[in-house]
Every structure is written in structure tokens, then in C-alpha cells.
Image (cartoon, rainbow, N blue to C red; front, top):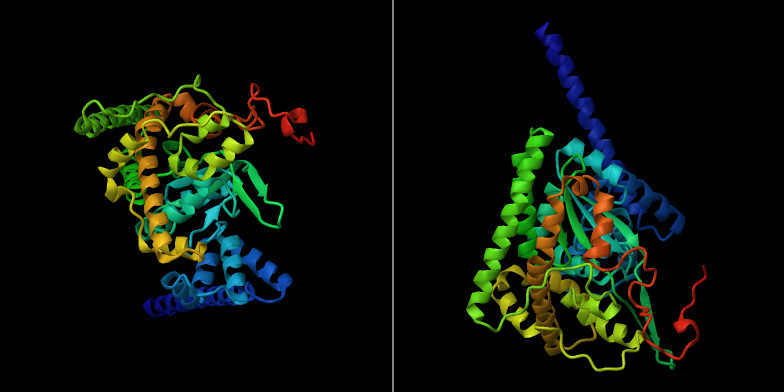
Length: 434
């Protein structure tokens, strides 16, 4: 009897191992076909790999690991036709632009993400953005996430192994094209912001990270959320809501104490800590100040399109915010993987100009980190305390975009068409097919 049982057990193990081996072999075959020169064959294979979930992306990353490693190590290595097909496949299977350096699988349907979370017991990181994460020109902050956060070795490890990832577009990212009349064109996005929500494995909202954070700060927030989730395990709704309200109250208190500690070092010369209010000016220029890194990219174009006739001074209290950011420098320094991507995207720059650009960009990430933490986060916590608001993620997100980012769905022009500015063009220069 025991011998028969042992034989059957062994047979099942062999069959199971063979099934896994065949599945892996199938995924490897699909990975090779996904980079085929035949567009139809490549598209079919990419679709099948996408349907396999994270396993499909892992097959691609494994198949082309050598090519990926070479280009991360040396950003100057050119983009061969094969490499272009590899990166396209990685982006489409993982649903993220520049996914060769991140290797992350993103769900684009929240219900699919919830199923994966329930099966794995992992929480969900849900990103809301303007445009799509696969777009070259999604909103500025989501592009910075693809540079600062997702490729970062430590952040990537947490996202890859401890979270189920999901993104959803709130609306298309507005673009502006400057035509210089001689064939040269400059295309950028204007306005818009992004936010990461942390949900439990059942899809219930527990935390929110507005805008851009430095990689170390972002990782720390993810780990704090994991600790919070562990305290909520096996609690009933009443216990859960009480624990969450206490947590949000304590975080607001900690935020205030940290603010006092930071600003005490500068005496009276500190930036004003104005709470985000729905009554704030919501034109495109005012909105741009909410995210310094994004503002540096967008402000010149926004100022041009809205035809503001007065010269704007520097962003209010910018120098003071920079001093505060420098107190937390370790939170926002980029790692080699992030700088590798920046170098690959800007091959025309000299070494000196590249270093200057990276240093300036890092500092703006630092300013964004402290401003998001000290200005936006307390407002979010005050909303999260309200059980009814927190219970509906879509309603909560609508409020965030309307009352925190000041880009409400009711304003189809996203603050870029102020009613009190004359531009001497019919209909304010707008073209509205609807």
C-alpha cells in the first residue's frame, strides 16, 4: 500500500514538473516570437505573453537579459532594430514605457488586479495618471515615476515581489506642440498630476502618495503601508476603521512635528505652509506650482499658451523649500539605474551638461518630496479619516483631482483657458470637435 502510494506520488510529481517545464518552454518560445520581424507573429505572441500575466513578462526579461544588461550598463550602446522590437514587446507585455529597465507587470483592469492580490495575499499599488503609462508623453509626473521610482533597484524589488501593480488613466494628457517653421518641432505635455494609492488585497483604500517622491522616501512609505496592513489583518470593520482613523491622526501629528523640526533650523525665513484649499486659484500657471519637478518642464509652455503678459517671479519660497529638501537629501538621490535611463534618453548632452541636468533634476525631486509630504499629505489624511469617502476609490480619486490637483473633470481645458485673458484669436484659439 505504501509502495503504491509512493509510486502514485512520484508519478504526480513527475507529471506536475513536466507541465511546468512545458509551460516555461512555451513562454520562452513566445518570448522569441514576440521579437519577430513579422509584425503579425510578434503581435500574437505579445498578446499571449500579456495574458500569461507576470510569468509572460518574466519570460521576456529572461530571454533578453543579456541585451538588457548591456544597455543598462552602457547607455551609449545604440538601438538596433532588434533592440527596438525587444523594448516594444517589454512595454506592451508589462504595460509600461521603458520597461526594459523596470521589468514590472502592470494590470490595467482593477478587478484583474484584485483577483491577483487575493490569490497572492499581496496589497495593490494603484496609479492614477493623465494619459497611459505606455505613452512616451503621459503626464510629466508619471514619466518621472518611470525614471526615479520604477527602475530604482530597491523600489523595484519591493514592487516586483511585494505588490500587485495597477494603473488607470484619468483622462488624456494634454500636449502642446511648438512649430519653429523650419521643420523643427517641440512637443511636451502641460499640466496634470499623478497619485499612487495603496489598497489591501481586497482592493480597499488605506494610503495615498500624491505626486513625485524620492526613491528612498517612496520605499519607506510602501513599507509603512505594509506594516499598517499587518495590523489590520483579521479585524472586523469597526476595529479596522478605528485603527485607520488612529493611524491617520498619528501621521498628521508626525507630519506637523517633522515640519516644526525642519523649519526651526531656518528661523523666521521659512516657506509658508498653506493648506491645499478648493478656493485656490486653479488656472494652469497656479496648478503648475503644485509640483516643482513637473513645473520646471511645463511652466514656460504653460505661460506661453495662456499668454500671461506679466513676467512671473520665481516660485514662491523656492529657495526655502530647497533648504528643507537638502535636510533629507538621502531620500531623493537617484541610483545608477535611473541615471542610466536619463543618459540613454539624452545622448546629445556633454558629460558636463549631463551632470548639471541630473543634479538639477534630483534637487527638484527633493523639493517635490517635501512639498508633497508637508502640503498635500495632511489634506489627504483628513479625507482618508472619513470612512465613507475612503470606501469608494473612484469617488475619492475624483475629489483628489478636483480639490487637490485642481484638474476637475468638469473643466475640459484643465485650467489652460482662463476666461479673463484676451489673446486676440477667435474662440480663444480653441478647436473643440464636440
